[in-house]
Image 1 (cartoon, rainbow, N blue to C red):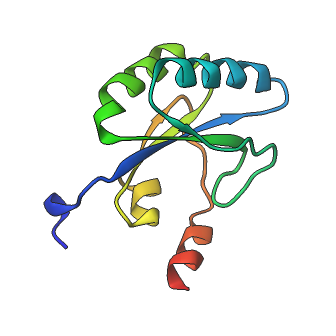
Image 2: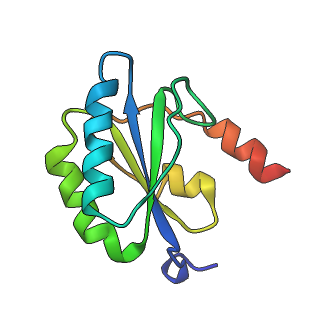
Image 3: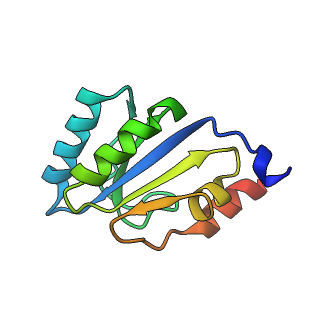
Length: 118
């Protein structure tokens, strides 16, 4: 598939936190749910999948990108956030097509590669 023909079906934002910033993450979560059309994922208080820290996922449509990402830029309260498209290629989406707000964390991409291989 040519790179310029990839379709973006949606976006995920992974909001990372730890025990000292969980309340901050809750405020960001509340802001997202009250201002935007998003689907909030469960709280994961331990690393899960490719994610090296506790986090929750926020799913949103491509139409919402232009509102949600600028809001997160200004309201992330120092949390690290991974934003990636959903194209059907989880490895590329998490590594190549992503953007980071805050620090870029080291993801466990081998986890995604193993899933893709099954």
